[in-house]
Amino acid sequence: MSLVAIKTYALVSPISNARTIYGRCRTGNRDLVGFGINGCANYKDDAHFPFPAVRFKENTRDICALREKERGDWKLLCCEEKKALYRASFCQTFAEFQHPTGTWKFVLGGVFFMTSFAFWAAMYNHYYVAGPLPVSLSKASQKAQLRRMFEIRANPIDGISSKWDYDNDRWKH
Image (cartoon, rainbow, N blue to C red; front, side):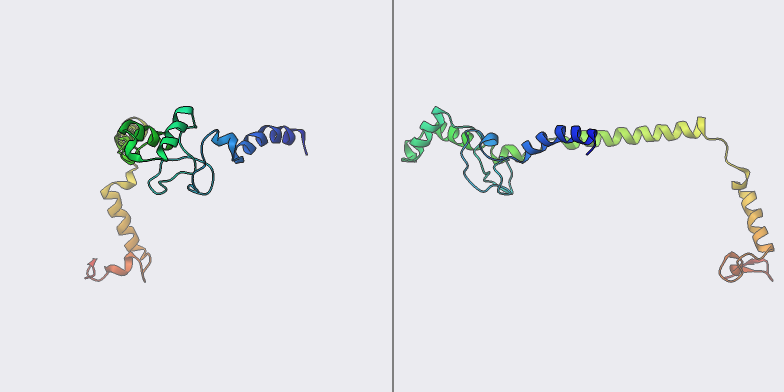
């Protein structure tokens, strides 16, 4: 192995190993409560997988006390305690993480900006960069080229000369 490859491996390997380790080092003091999206111990608010593998917040004394109280009758829990329990398990409600973000406005503005930039670049190119069109693109020159193709009978089987009536000097019907 070359020295550069060894140094590159030494720099890359700790980072790549840290990304593949799962367990307490990544979840901290949070409870593992389910399978999750792909069986890994991670958290994500997602409507397709509504139950993440770990709880959102780490266990504190307050949360542990609420969990003990939760095991009893839920009628004894007040609304604030129920909300605190929910926020300990989940970061956002469905309504919070599914609401429109408004990024379409930013994207549409970017599209309009790039379209206007392309338009003005084309105008600049047309008036200041590109030279005049060649003479061969004028109507008179194109008619002369077409007449020359008829005179030399270019592509008489399938081409343009096959559609020309040479006896009457006009297009075939």
